[in-house]
Amino acid sequence: MYNLLLNAKITTKAFSKIHLNWGIVMKKSTKQMIKWASIAVLTAILGVGIGTGHSDVQASKTTSSKIPVQLLAINDIHGGLQTTGKFVMDQTTVNNAGGLARLGGYLDQSQQQFAQKNPGGVTVRLQSGDMVGASPANSALLDDGPTLAALKAMKIQVGVLGNHEFDHGIDQYLAETQGKTPSTANLKNQLQVQAINDYPFANTKMKMLIANVIDKATNKIPTGYRPYTIQKVVDKKTKQSVRVGYIGILNTNLPGIAKNYKLLDEATTIAKYDRVLRAKRASKPSLSWGI
Image (cartoon, rainbow, N blue to C red):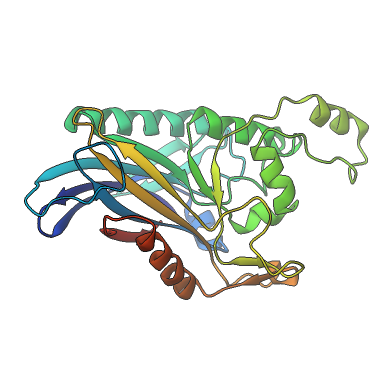
């Protein structure tokens, strides 16, 4: 599976025009690419508010302005703090690829390059699931606390559930993202229990989304999660603003999860919350995509 880099420039005139540039940040090994079991999707819907700095102000039809916004998304980390491997891309073999320190460096580099080309432009960092689970020992023995600390250090702002976030329960996962120590009730190794209890779990401050997962016990989205979020970002140079909406979607082809949860159709759910986001602001959404 690929991690995608998306640059989006929004031009507001009588009609909005979108200019996209796609690139590759990182590629997982061929074996991992073949065996991945699910896709967690972030759908972003962008609308533009111009002139006053208030996001609910409609753009004039005679106004012409560009607000550069870059979304950097990562996926399927699986606690790979120091995991490296080999991959081939564009007929070039790359050895010792991987590791979160290197990935963080790539994100920083991309953000800096974007800022140089787009003074005042804004970069938002996202994760689209499977940050934890099936992890190496240096993350797994601390219930993936080190991986969450790395996500905080990389300034990931918005996240969605993947299937592996369900491994120890999504309630526990959410608590950990908020800096709370997870339960150790099912652990027998007292050294591991002590290590987890002593570990300083970091509050990542990620906004965690999932729109198409319903808890069968309550018939609602799991407690603490939200189906979408809207983020106002401001061009640092012009002070003009753009409202970015994100919808969290999980692949429905996951029978193991269906025991305790109902998985709603992806397209129907996206369409539902697309309408909600459109109704929540004056500026019309300009773009919708899945990551």
